[in-house]
Length: 92
Image (cartoon, rainbow, N blue to C red; front, side):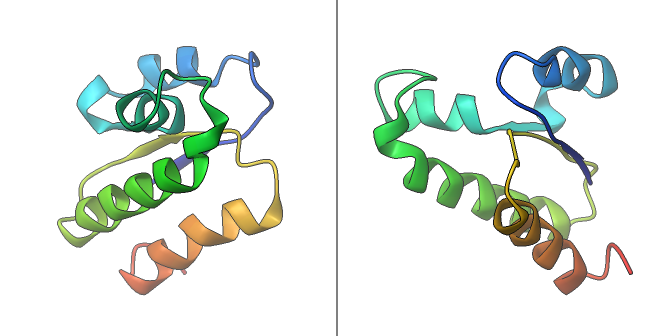
């Protein structure tokens, strides 16, 4: 699992596209677009991250390489994905 961290517009999505095939990238913006009215629809952020975390759980369970493209600026946001990785034994 690779977690990209940085503010909006810092190049996370560009880096994600260079690191992995699009099928291996979980993007919070993409989940917002699927659930809400576009990538910038902040009203669905909770639901979007719920969906991202469920997808991450499924990928970790099958040991699939995953790149997370989300700002992850807060310790709580990073902790949520790291906790899942630890639970699946994919990190120390």
